[in-house]
Picture (cartoon, rainbow, N blue to C red):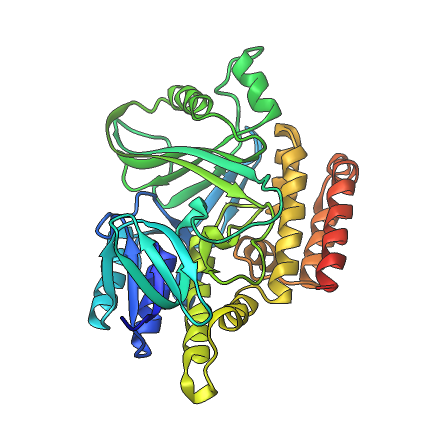
Length: 422
């Protein structure tokens, strides 16, 4: 049978966003996913301005006008940047409806392998069905199902355990979300758990919906190796006891293990990637959903443009190479190197060092910390960000950054030079 123009493997936000846009341009698209009707399991939180910029404000279900950060028992920050929870059921149903309206076909299966020939590819599914396609997009997330890597994969890991719960009461202001709480007064002095937390710290992230309904998540920002889920849950239980939060019932619970940093996939290669499988997680924060949704139109428009026979039409390796070039242009690759440098520094910081880092970070001009968290800063602005962060840091933190940042800095510079030679 004639190949479809695009086969999207994976039905997450990134995959559906690309499928929808390519289909809107009049091309044939099939989405292959083992559970196309499944509600996405994770609670996504985003800065409101990120979703506003994409015209997705109606897919936010709760908005907090500001956010707070607790550095320790004596220092806190108020972040005047609205934050929201994504209405994930609405986002998915909106995307699915648009896909169906524009003729995207859905095939419920798992892709076992893909075989390439000169102008198209054949996706072999676990139900025995073979789907021919001109372009294959791997949007399977961290499983890295089809996209190839050729360098040792040694990422840091963000590990989190969260619950959406009905509680007797909680101590948080319902008009503020809690972005980070680095306090450790809930852990007994001299205990093994306090010592573990002082070496590899975790923080509380909370979205209060009412005086008795709240999403609570204990998170290890980044560690290598990642913390165990049992350790995270033990820390969270101790924190909730200390805060006097008694759980009445749990609506949802989630366990997140997010690989951060590590090498990019082979660039270019025949299968195009997006999201986690393409190395798009922010290596310093673990953020991905807003950045991936913002990138989906770039990938989709690139596929449409290069498949358009009016432009001479290219296929196979040449087409994939052009799409990869637009997904990871030089400025994005350099930006990612800087973020990996940030991750490498964070990996070396204990609780005190982490507190000093974020105390300086959230004292920066909003342009800098907004831009860093939302992947909007590029070189040389990132260098200005680094200098500004250093200037805001305490003397202890400056010495720490110099001592612990030297090797990561040398690694970043080496990688940037190598990248320049590509």
